[in-house]
Length: 244
Image (cartoon, rainbow, N blue to C red; front, side, top):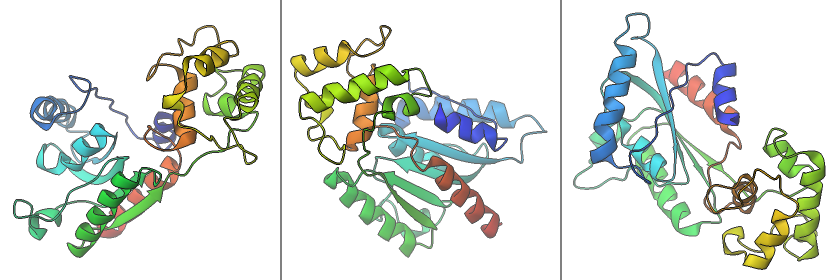
């Protein structure tokens, strides 16, 4: 919601496309995305609009290949989140990397393996002359209002405070309000206790629960996040305008 609201507030048209399967595939999803974009930009009133793309995890990897997937529009900038980007190789020479628009790598340094891939991608892209910004997503403090604020009020203030209190009672947050364990590894006792304070509509199921997704964001290992999206988009717009 935060990403969409930010784009709309800047008067962008937002196109949301889901992958055919659980993860994104260039072979399967590439033709689908190209068809959607071809249809959208076939309108004379829209054909000259710049295209900015955002994707996370496998979606981030997919977005990193977008310049080679579609020719439907002028790709003005990419935000690749929690995923590595293109690298120099025999199959991808510097001349191919030079085709990329300005790019933002939004990643979680706690995931050291991905961070190493991101570092290498940034070095290769800059060598090819591409403008690149690194945006680090660090662990977030779980304050009494964290769940309320990050859910845009879907989780109310009483529930937000109670969820934090439950985490505190199990020593799952430290003196700085940072998680001490990966929430994806919480045992049944921890999840059941959180469920007693969560909204009745929250399933508490992995990858579906609002509460658990927000815990993953706070832990900052591998999760979709809107943190710094507004600043990253603004940087892409400036970089594109400077280039054109």
